[in-house]
Amino acid sequence: MGTIKLRREALIHNLDIIAHQAGGKDKIAVVLKDNAYGHGAVLIAKVASDYGVRHAVVRLEREALEIEPFFEDILILADFPPTLLFRTNPKFHYALNSLHSINKFPSGTKVELKIDTGMHRNGILPEEIEEAFEKIAKNKLECVGVMSHFRSADILSSEWFWQRKIFNELKSTASKLALKKGWNPRFHISNSAGAFRGGNDEMVRVGIALYGCLEMDNTLPQPDLKPVLSLWGNKISTRILKAGERVGYNGIYEAREDEMISTYDLGYANGLDRLASNRYVTPDGAALRGRISMDCAAFASDAEELLIFNNANEYAKSVGTIGYEILACLDKDLKREWID
Ligand SMILES: *Cc1c(COP(=O)(O)O)cnc(C)c1O
Image: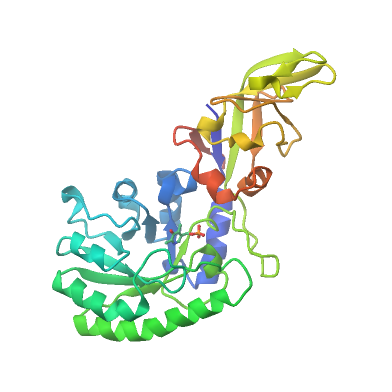
């Protein structure tokens, strides 16, 4: 099985840039959902926590439990009620994505209310906030946050501006309403791209920027972030393909002349998108030959250890997707190690 190598220096570099942009380390919430975008949640949590980050965001309660020692609070995005076992964990905040879901949570749960400011994915409407607060209070939940999400912070258009405006207006009305209930919720809307557009919220929820793979529209300022993760394959075997011979399923690659190829221990089951078959070329110039198999792939190389990519966005482009998908689909069982 392949190896994921992580650069601590790149992660710290990215945290410095994000802290500067957000207005302090205490404003950063690191998004560690889906195994920290494939990087390894506990590995990233430790470094972020040592750096001084106090807040984290995950999708599931199970993920929150894994990183619980490292943060003061952890926001759980999936709208599932707490299981009995963790009900009392005071560090856990649960996102509320609809009015309906308020009833699912037991009294005493800390919740953060999601507002739909225009993405129309999750959250209640701004005009429903009063009703939501009543319901939250009636069910004896504690509202510790009010949040939203940008749909297009990464591109230059009117969209970021009107969503920002709706959220700012909501902040002033919601904080007054909350005060009457005895709550002092934190307000946050920005993901990575949003954080680099500006604003003055109490917190930013950064995922992809932390990992150094944020891509902004080229008309917007480009933060100088560094990718943290590189993916490496370990050689299984080497052979010479004679001119006219073919490699892999259905023999879609044919050698024009005698050519040395090797198989490496990474396939589509490990996150190597099969659409890269027979077209991807590594940063060191090794071409992928033939179809990617479930657990291995052939490259024109005989290196013992082969760099597959050191920037997920570049690999993503060869298969017509985005770095997020490539990272999030990296096999949980891959070996992960810091190299600095
Ligand atoms: C995943 C996610 C983020 C992080 O987004 P990035 O673009 O990776 O920074 C922030 N907020 C929510 C609600 C998310 O689901």
